[in-house]
Length: 123
Image 1 (cartoon, rainbow, N blue to C red):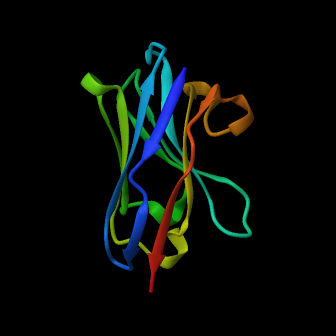
Image 2: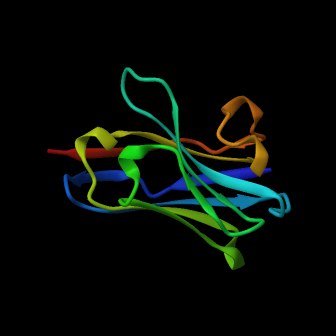
Image 3: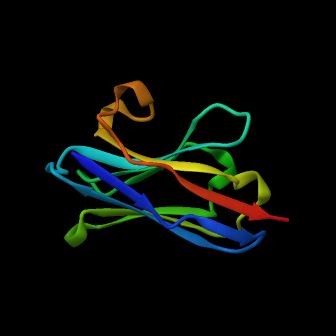
């Protein structure tokens, strides 16, 4: 089971970025793939996940509601996090993770983690 995350970078406040998480080595049915982030000096927190079973997305951070969108490209087994109207407070290392849908958003119950990708939003 492998997850590969990419797409981070430096962007000005108000800008957009799209993160990608490519999954391989396992069947996605019944799984949710999503994102956590860890800002400097803060605990890791769940951001969102995409359930491959019913195609629904869940957002765990009130601050990203309406700005972030999680989606999937089924043909590529890739889940995206489209981030718009970025704020300096979104600066963090973003990690993608996968696990049974019912185990979200608890990180110790998830099966796989990708490497982090840095997102930096300048003011």
